[in-house]
Image (cartoon, rainbow, N blue to C red; front, top):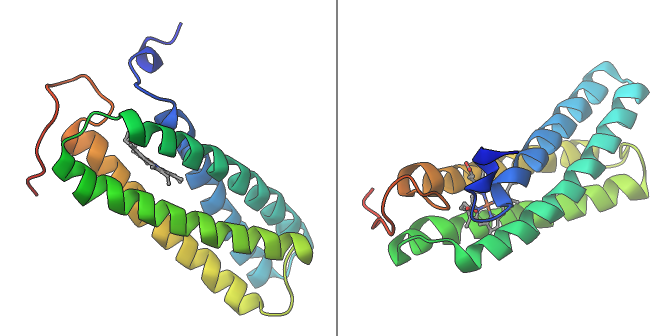
Length: 156
Ligand code: HEM
């Protein structure tokens, strides 16, 4: 039924776009809620943040599973997989703090709001750099793919 997905070595690439899209969406909505002083935007931002956090748990779990079996050269593991994992774990830590904070005073903290918004931006920045490492593993070194022979040694 899905010949593209059939060639995947693990589920990680199927789930990672959810936290990326949802957490970026939550940050945008919280920014809009702050600028427009809108409760409706804040409510939407809260729901999207919680969904993003849940999907992040799935992405981390599938990533940790993928790490065991993905066919990449040891040099690619050290240069790309290790920083990818580290940055995604930092993203998860920040996301846990932000989601816990938002749940405690839902939907949008009043006290410490600038810090909340700043941490959201930091989380998005860390996640973006981390995802780029993931992309390099796949598109430069054929991680999880069967388009060419593995393993490819890290060169750049
Ligand atoms: C901390 C645990 C994580 C580990 C150990 C991990 C590991 C991996 C591995 C081994 C790959 C290579 C592709 C494959 O799976 O076959 C990969 C790709 C990727 N990962 Fe992760 N990952 C983790 C968390 C995340 C999270 C939380 C996200 C998103 C928020 C993410 C985003 C990506 C992206 C964008 C790619 C490139 C996939 C593609 O373009 O097809 N990873 N990751």
